[in-house]
Amino acid sequence: MTPAQEALLPQARNAWLAAGLSTEPADWHAAYLGIHAAYLAAGLAPPRFIIRVASPWAAVLAQAMAPEIITRHLAQVGDQVYAQVRAQVDDQVGTQVRDQVRAQVDAQVRAQVDDQVGAQVGAQVDDQVGAQVDDQVVDQVYDQVDDQVRAQVGAQVDAQVGDQVYDQVGVDRLRNWYGGRIAGQHWAGYYSYYYVMGQLGVTECHRMAGQMLTALSAGWWWCYQGFAVVSDRPAELHRDAQGRLHCADGMAVRYRDGWGFHAWHGVRIPAELCTGDLSLSRVISIGNSEVRRSVIEMTGWDKLESDLGEPVAVAADPGNPGRELALYDVPAGLYEERVRLVLMTNGSPDRSGAERRYGETVPATISDPVEAQAWAYGVPRSVYAALERRT
Image 1: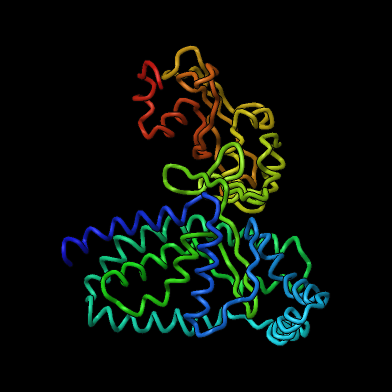
Image 2: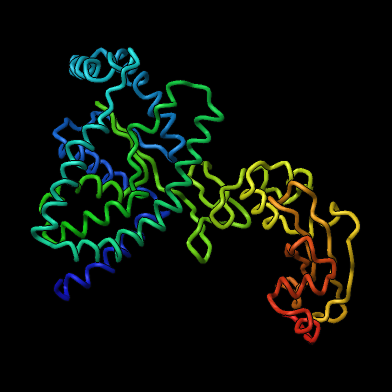
């Protein structure tokens, strides 16, 4: 690769990361142009109607209701011009939808654009670019963008929409919501690969331009014959230092219509478990062990201490003079195996001046609080016992 081509990789990575994680309002005009171009690239007539909504969840509802609304609206229009449009839309959309045979364009878009581009890119990469360059693009652009955008954000949005559809809505026509979906900005990793390959001379990649423009301009979208639905980007997106979805005091992802979900260091948490006012018995009843552990961390052992009963043992904390260590049995069912909990006071007050108490789980075989604290710190008991102050 030339120096100029080498310099392209971090630029492309950063641009697609910014697009994939963007919380700016959608550029609807650019999104419409991108959707039209995507249809044309697939050899299809662009949609006559493009419905814009505020969130993926609203889009799932819209793609189910749109055909009926469109045909009903057209049936009420008496103008001759619109009568022609009505007839055309009825032929292309209404009849098929009314018979519950939805003519989804997604398969054609994939077959005529994605698959052909993928096959031709594979051949052209070998001929024009080379396998070594391909590996470099994957390592420096695709993998880094995909890991942060699709794997950590898009997959959770996808799962949350799925939960709403399958667990909360008993409507059959919503259950095919996945088929026509293109994840737009959350496929940034996928598009970043084809974008770079196009810049490196793989000419067939230009046929992905419409999908790329839509991904750079808006959120998820759905393609059907005669109409499309496109969602706005999220209004808020919070992540921890490792890039995982995380928010301690609200939704980790929130869209402009209020839809979204909570997450704690990458683990989706049901909204009803984010109140901070939970009993230990309620936490134990959570079926998913990963969610259970996250809720404990999010709630804090200091708020659950009163439900633990009497401690197994109490001892002065050598690393924090004037404070005590308390060792508790942890109720069965909270973790996969039996453990104990050593509860301690933080060595330094937090920003509010409060001394926060927090806990660490230790093996159930430990019965001495100082030994438990030493185990949590990864040092021998004698070393921890000799400490003057812990911070």
